[in-house]
Structure formats: C-alpha cells, structure tokens
Image (cartoon, rainbow over all chains, first blue to last red; front, side, top):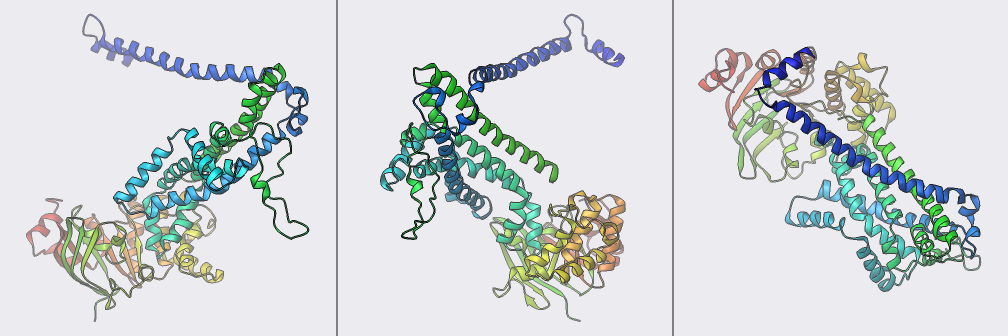
Amino acid sequence: MKEKKKFKKRLNLGGISRSKYYDYQDKLFNYFALGCTLFGVFILIYLMYNILSAGLGRIDWDFITNGPAPRAAATGIYTALLGTLWVMVITAFVAFPVGICAAIYLEEYAKKSRFSNILEINIANLAGVPSIIYGLLGLQVFSRIFGFGNSVLTGGLTLALLILPVIVVSTREALKTVPYTIREASYALGASKWQTIWQQVLPASVAGIFTGVILSLSRAIGETAPLIVIGAVTFVSNVPGGPYHGIAPETGQQLWHGLFDEFTVLPIQIFNWSSRPQEGFKVVNSAAAIIVLLSITFMMNGIAVYLRHRWQKKIKW
Amino acid sequence: MANKIDVKDAHVYYGAEHTLKGVSLGIKKNTVTALIGPSGCGKSTFLRLFNRMNDLIENCRIEGEMLIDDVDIYSNKINVSELRKAVGMVFQKPNPFPKTIFENVAYGLKVNGVSDKFLIQQKVEESLKQAALWEEVKDKLKKSALALSGGQQQRLCIARALAVSPSVLLMDEPASALDPLSTIKIEELIYNLKASYTILLVTHNMQQATRTSDKTAFFYMGELVEYDDTRTLFTNPKKERTQNYITGRFG
C-alpha cells in the first residue's frame, strides 16, 4: 500500500495526475461493462418470470400426454412433443454422420488446394444462411422433387441440412484441438491414417464433437420458420407413433409409413396458440409449452457444458 | 562390416526451399550417432528421412538413396507402416497419447495387428523395463499417461517406440524439454539401449553428444560439414566451422 502511494506520487507531475485520469477511465468502463452484462441478464430474468408465472401452473401430466382439444384446459402438447422428438431423431440420424465425416475429410484428408479452399469458405458461409432459405430448399427438394410431402421425413431432412454446416465447423474445431504431435506419434508407430483418426484423434476429440453436435441440435429444436415453409401442420389429431410401425401381419413388410406422417413441433404449436384470441391458449398454454421447450434446450445445453467441462479436466495437452 | 544405414546424396526440398543438400553418410550397427548443428541446419529433416515422416508434409520432395540393411527404404515395394515399425522415433516434446500407460505402450502392437493379450502384456512389461520405467509405473498401468511427470512421459514414449521391436531408434532432441535429472536418466538409457539398437540422436547439447555418442555428424545450412568419431570431432575437428560451433562461437 505504502509503495503504491509512493509510486503514484512520483508520477504526479504537478497539476492533474495522469494516472488518476486512467484510474477513472478504468472504473468508468468497468461500470459500463457491468451495466451491459446486467442488461442482458435482467431481460432474461424478466422474460422467465413472465413465462413461469403464466404457464407453470398449467403444466401437469395431462398437459404432456393430451392431444389437441377444443377447450384450452383440456389441450396438451403430446403431438407436438412427439413431433419434435421424431424430427430430432431423423435430423440427428442424418446430420451427425454426414457432418462429422465431412469435417474429418476437410481436417484430416483434404490437401490444401483451391478446391478445398472453396469448399471451406462455402461451408462457413452456409452456416450463416437464414433458416427460411433452408425451408424453401427443403420444400422444393424433399417435399416436391422427392415427393415426401409435408412429412416428418421432410422436416427432419430440412433441419439436418440446416445444422450440417454448424456441425462441420464445430467438429473441425474439436479435431483441431488434438495436437499434431499425437498424430505424428501414431504414424511413427506404423499406424495408418485410418487407425490414427479412429484410435487417437476421434477419441481425444469426441467430447468436443458431441458438445458442438448437441448445441446444433438444440438450435434445431427451436427452429420454426423452415418448418412452416415446408408445411408442418398446426393441428395433428392422430398421435404420431413414430416412423417405424412394426411388421405388417399379412405381408411381412416392414412398415415405415410413419416417416410420411404429417407432424407438428413445439415451436409451431406455440406459434399457433399464441396467435389465438382465447386467453387460455394465447397466454397460459403457450407459456406452458414454452417452459417445456426451454427445459429441453436447457437440458441439452447443460449436457454440452458438462461434457466440455469433463473433457477439459481429463485431457490437458 | 557392412553399414546398418547408408545414405547417398540425400536431397530434401520443401517447396522451393532446399533443406538438405546432398548428404552422404554411413552408420554402423549398434552405435549412437549424434547429429548436431544450429537450428534449421537440416538435422531433424535428415533424421526424419529414415522413417519417412517427411512424406507427411505437403510439397516435400526427396532425392537420393537411403538404405537400411541394404534395402532402399524409398522403393515402391516398401510398406511405410512396416518401415516405421522397424525404425522407431522419439520426439522432442513428450507426446504420450491421452490414454492409460498400458494402452500407450500397447498401441503400436495393436495397430500392427497383434491381438494376443498375453503377448501384448509381456511386451508392454518388457518395453517398460527396457525404458527403465517399469518400477515407477507397474502399479498404475491403468492410470492416464498424462498424469506422469515430463521425464516419465518421455521414457514412456521410448518404451512405446521399443514395443514394436524396431532395430533403429530415431531421437529428436529427446531431453531438450526435460529437467537435468530426467536428462541424465534418458542419457543412461540411450547408452544402455545401444546394445540392441542403432540410435540416431539429434541434440543441441554438446555435452550430451560427447557423453552418449560414438560418432557425431555436424550439419550446417543443409550440408554435412564433418562426420567423425565423437572424440575426434570434439577434440580435433578438421573444419574451422566445426571448431567454431563446438566451442560456442556461433550457433
């Protein structure tokens, strides 16, 4: 303390102290930055409070397991929840392997060339394309050209396209954290590229890859725009039982017709309810559905954070 | 006696850069050869010729004849994986895999198709003993290799290289990232391993070269300036440039 004072005195060249001015500047910016942080947090808290107070009382087992009904109090989110679930399963099934393999190609196999440069830039750009554009693409390609209609399959494939670039980018980042020396050590023992990737690079980066993959999936869960474009319906009366319907008793064929069922998802359900005039739908039900949707995404983000935390603890290069 | 390793007029280019400019050299079996010279003189590049690690670098072009046991290791008939099994390498910084100690040593065997569990266990123990690490880790083989100290990690990397039974061992400044005590252990190890392996050792440490090696090769600007018995080279160098380098006047 004493030394600090001395130091300041020496710098005080008469008149206004320069260091004092810098101190004020520092403090001012400190408070300003704190204000910015609190601003975001405050808005979020306000939003959460609003939603929780409106919808928390509405959530019970019936709300989860009931299908659509004319009365607000008897309505549930079952069809939307299952719709969301199945769309996510299809999205994950398509986007994960394709995205991860593409990232492995770009990071491990592709030689530096003009072609790979163009590929890289385009994938980075794709991650920034507005989601509604993907909706239009899905409508044209999956719904019309492939003839899947406004089905779960179209929805899942469209969202898979949407998150594909995000998965590629985040997987590449995860692969990049594995130091080159590890690859070198593996090659030096006579391992092939395939062995090095599968036995060293992927295991060392798997938590990072999954973190990115889960975050991208939780982004897809909240998407509304592209699904509206491809024609996800807002009222599904029969509960979708999932894509696979077992084996037909007479013919022995496997029944995958569930893939072509109409569907709705949580965000669309919320969108639909919030645009109705009745208070019970507009405020209470939509708030309750928002709570469910938020819980799902928070849970997924929580898993991602946990994975990253564990991974950092386990592996220190 | 025929040489274990013979190099005739080796050139290496990285793109337009001519990194190794016509090096010829013969190395006898069961000897330690120190490669010395200032940074960027081409000694690491030279070392990496023998397990073809330079192949992994894009734009790298290699000319000349490299023979191990009179076999051209750059011929089309050579399987690079087989070559790397026969020519082990230890790197500058300890780079254990983020796996258990056991898995680190067993990895080389597994990727080369050994699946006999008993054989793997035997080989792991034998290699760890050879690398003078067995006593320290025998009770924690299932623990992560990353929990070991730097010196232990480096000896683990040596054990890992020995496990696939190479005949040549390439060491790229194996002790430069270690404390003095660990360095002494590594040097003792090099001395003991000489009986079974032919060792090439890149080092920046003159004392280390004199303590461990039989022959020393001095590289400068991609050329082999002088190659002789270590004692002769350090006490009575024939070239002025060697004299200047070993006495610390440059580099």
